Image (cartoon, rainbow, N blue to C red):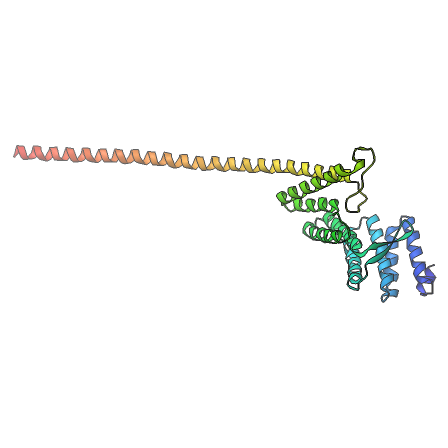
Length: 284
């Protein structure tokens, strides 16, 4: 198999993919990744092959939790899909569960942007993640009637992490209200089975409501903590200001007493001098 790949024979591409799959099944994700990186240069001008290898890399990076790799390879896959979109392609062939299926290019882009955003979130790149999720939502709206609420839940996490709590609260309230409305309008809402998903995701609507409400509760609890911190800080500031004002008042009162005493003493001295002068005149 390796010989077939190295000699770039007729079945070299299939041999490379088969070898990567075998290594993956053995749990040798690092070796599988290295194999792709080593041999992919043989087909630099074959976009279809490069895209296929990038799809395999993305799967390997997800299994090995290589976040930097996921961010990099989703960027390459997004570029392929955007080029296809600019060329007028509307469908995209993907392989799931051993079967080939066709999905819209917009759905493909939505999935890739969301995967990229989630990897960026785990790396702490909150602003970049927010932009990726916004792009995911943009493409989601172009292929589905109802937006994927779980994307908005991830967006809310980005808003919370960047300190925009009011925006996050509004977004989560929107998620909870929208998902609750879907649940109430679904005939199976009161059965033991999951209702249909919103926006084509495999996550059930009921679960989404739970996620949104849980995130909202956590956010409100965080609000309460932040408000308590602000209130405590205001109380400390007020105590310092009041103490300073009290010191100023005390200094003013002390200064007034000293001025009054000085004036009284001066008046007494002037009276005594006048009396002495009068006595001296009478004696003359």
